[in-house]
Image (cartoon, rainbow, N blue to C red; front, side, top):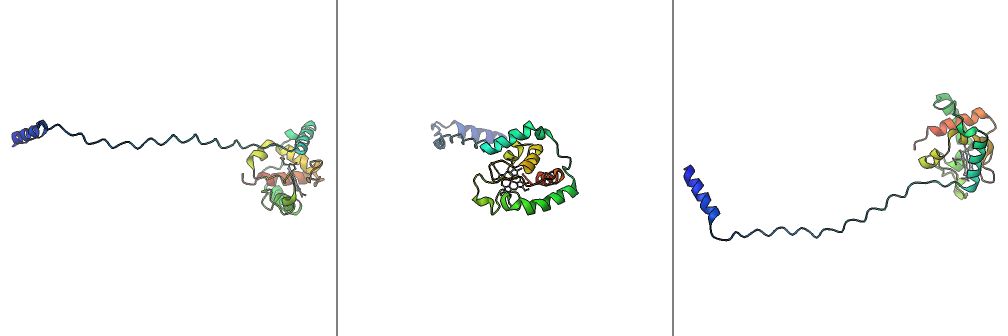
Length: 162
Ligand code: HEC
């Protein structure tokens, strides 16, 4: 039995018929290598001249390196949120997205506080300085006179998703 299987398979293999190679499935013409997808443009933020001046002024005042003592303080964040709604949302948007109704008509546009690139460009100290000093020449006026209130608002801004 075993022998007959071996024999018959030998016969099957050894036939003189040239073995016709099954045509190799033609490899589909290699699709042209997709153009390396253009690298997503590096997200950048180029400050307006006025904003750049404000950043410099904050730095000159040493305000840029000041940490926000109220960061993460729940009570401060709640107060900051309420003040933000009253004083800032019209331009910067109810959720901080830079899309308030008044802001829509402005050029430059109010800062979008959810834009991580822009957010990271300035420190909390610089932002606090801007609340109290404005961005001279822009729609961003001096809106807060009290250091503590400014810190509360910035503490709130820090909690926005970005
Ligand atoms: C009348 C509209 C308006 C109101 C109201 C307003 N802002 Fe602005 N704000 C602007 C505009 C416009 C800019 C951007 C100016 C620029 O880029 O030159 C700006 C920029 C800023 C910046 C600078 C962000 C950065 O890093 O460049 C901060 C911080 C800021 N606003 C916070 C506030 C807060 C907090 C309030 C409320 C107390 C407020 N703003 C109210 C219009 C407004």
